[in-house]
Image 1 (tube, rainbow over the protein chains, first blue to last red):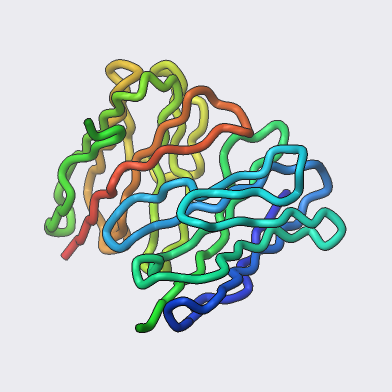
Image 2 (image 1 turned 135 degrees about the vertical axis):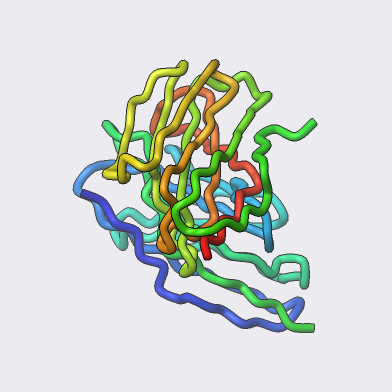
Length: 113
Length: 114
């Protein structure tokens, strides 16, 4: 079985500050890792994903994430956030044999002016 | 040019009623899904269809019946609605049912059962 833990339910930050949203997973086999963003009253959309290769993955809107196998983490970062980044962020995992992602409980990023 | 669309966007109804939610994708994907997002934002898979065939049914009460008339459509019918069914229901699609595939989500249907 696999599980996904997003350590922070809410992250308040000021505009133009850097941010890190944390995600840890547990799995005994190789996994694929995803970050999705959900803007208010919308569906989820993919920010980025790690399948293989370079552990630093760049996504849309200036976000990036680093896969750390030894720490079983896939933290999401952005060096300078905008008000428009205010949204819910979901980390998700899939593994061989199951194509249905397991989602974390989400982190609400709140960007203040 | 909406990729995954759902109707209605909002649904308010009384306990005991029967309602349907429709989903359509114009991405040419083979696989479609229904998810339920509860009030705490937890997202849980309900059903998955591949080429109109049901392949995943995740311990959902049989009051929920999905139907896929073709691979571009996946509808969800709910009988005898209960208070606990209040949630946001998301339709999603992916090119094929494989672990590396991205899921493409619709805008959601906000269901409130009174």
